[in-house]
Length: 179
Figure 1 (cartoon, one colour):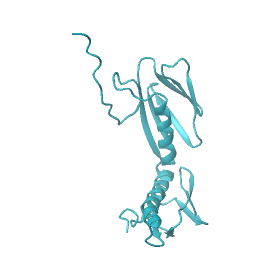
Figure 2 (figure 1 turned 180 degrees about the vertical axis):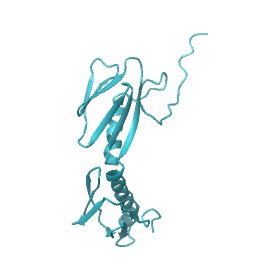
Figure 3 (figure 1 turned 120 degrees about the vertical axis):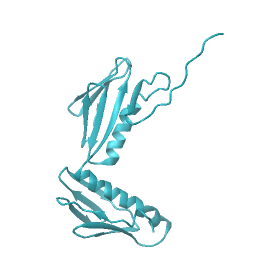
Figure 4 (figure 1 turned 90 degrees about the vertical axis):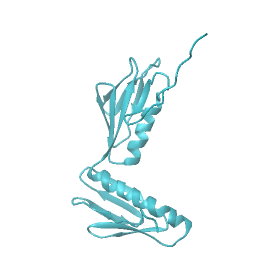
């Protein structure tokens, strides 16, 4: 039995849960999320909690048990609190600007980068060097933050580029020159 999978998921007040045809839909104050539930796993929904049960002890069912519980829990947390990921931009002349659902980045290339944000994602820019990616879908927030970071990842010599706010960049020593 999966230690994570056997824990029940508490349903906060104001959250509606529907499960039909192996599609789970959770609606809360911040929005609505839907997800296809994997084969070999079933859900028992009560008014106050959701329990993830597996059909048998086969490899697929065991693998999907804890994962399904975590995905469902992330859906519940997302529609109630939401998720966010902070990014920092380091470098002379590197800046970001959010205009509607487009993020404009100047990262030292010969051209600016205009990144169209996915639906359900909001990016807040503070002082043109700090970004906060927000949304209700944890997977989409992380994917968007990783995509923004990939435009100019941090380099180890001067630390220029886009990095996560909690990320530590290992710095390397440069060339020492002739002796």
